[in-house]
Amino acid sequence: MADYISPVFYDLLAVNSHIPDVRKKLPPLLTGVHRSILEIGAGTGLITTSVAEWTPAEIFALEPSAAMRAVLLSRLAERPDLLERITVLPHDALSLDLDDPLEAMVMINVMYALEPGYRKRLWPVLAGQLEPGGLLIFTWHDGGPPKPRPMRQLDSRQVGRHTYTVSSEITESDDEGATCRYLYRITQGDKLLSEEELVGHAYRPAWETLREELASAGFVQADAPDGLLAWRRP
Ligand SMILES: C[S@@+](CC[C@H](N)C(=O)[O-])C[C@H]1O[C@@H](n2cnc3c(N)ncnc32)[C@H](O)[C@@H]1O
Image 1: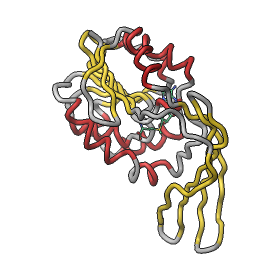
Image 2: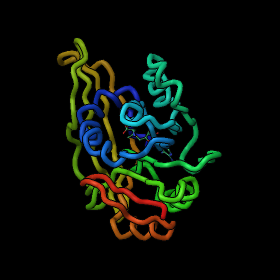
Image 3: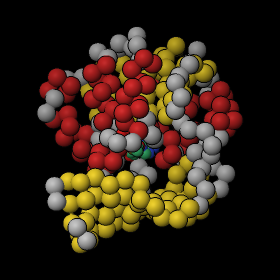
Image 4: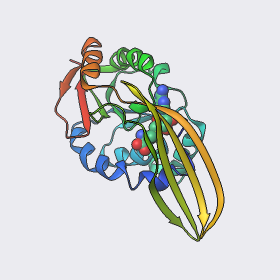
């Protein structure tokens, strides 16, 4: 898990950032997927439960972070209908070793957490777990890593009397990655109740790099809306 993500703040912020867009763009790509889907980096399950509502497929929700997985399982605990067909895998993506080939894989906002050497080793592992014709879908934005910039507020949510605010700063960046410093604050009026600082690295590979990596793992690009990429195992 990228170490600048706060599991405590995650849902509060994610529901107002990428989640609505992904929920709009992902369903058409999963049309015709009925048997099995792997979600890599399922996090707290915001996309997992949506995928389960869009398709009748068996779902494998892979999430290595115990803190994120706890929220995911908490979300599933009250959905006995989903508990029957969602298996939560507690390991990282490279350790994937399922018995049956998968129809589709979905990886939403996870690539930034994958160190380049790890990412290169991951594509062949994913290709090996997909059935022929199987689909790999993930979020990706062009433009490389963000440039250094000072601390600024990203979002803020009110929870009862308290305000949950996240701010971030990019302290360094190079061709593929950036070092990010995040501040998670809970306040009541002017009073600071808690503050947590998390620092981590985020990777954003260039299109050419990604294209070469996926092509050499045997993937062929398929159509996908802006912000998502889709690749098929021929
Ligand atoms: C920003 S969260 C996204 C969660 C979810 N996909 C969503 O969109 O709400 C990124 C997730 O990727 C997970 N992750 C990081 N490295 C991973 C790896 N090597 N294999 C699988 N998951 C990983 C993190 O633990 C984290 O839960």
